[in-house]
Image (cartoon, helix red, strand yellow):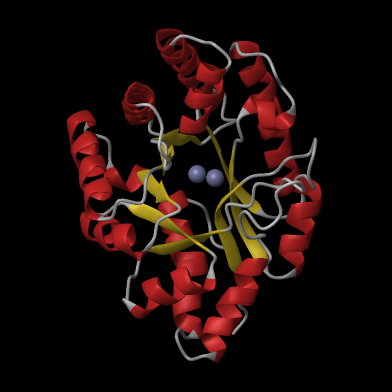
Length: 285
Ligand SMILES: [Zn+2]
Ligand SMILES: [Zn+2]
């Protein structure tokens, strides 16, 4: 059986890192066929302005990176967002919380505009800090998450949520927010989940992406979860190697799990192809 591999949540940084062209080529050479490309905060690309201009630059760079992935023969879905860490970053720079919220709203409008032009498929990352922060900043992040959810609902977009790893309560809270906004749960992806969130995400019908770490993958497969998607969450930052996996680590981990008899090739095909086709609405390789 010819095995194909996908990366359900990843980043590229052509300014400081390898960039999409090199990453996509290398991933394709190990069987990669699909990537979901997610924006990094604009200052990760060196766009240091605090206003909407930095986001316009970020979006144009993202669209160009997505084009390079497509040009390498891979399928791609593209998401741009306002990461909860951006709330903290702008607060540290002296911005008022209300102004940060307003900026985030303009960014969401900008993303919707790119979506209408067929350039962006979804909103992400938005969500809540996974680390301790001031309570009011957490609230700002959650309001941004809700506004993003409304925009995604109105424009039929997918979204990637960055959340605390709180098991049941994390997923339960997203279930409520999704209910309030009446967004289709299949459009909502919980990213970077452990087995504790994956169990509930699967039960409630959300999509979820599991980091390509040996232990995390082993646990979700041993639990028999079926809607599993695998992410590298590669941040493409040579200054922070090892923070996440590389996309090409995905086949390595999967092969290890096959060798150990934890999964078989049918499961791999379902996770790496069938689940991606369904979750991202793309045609199979
Ligand atoms: Zn994240
Ligand atoms: Zn990420």
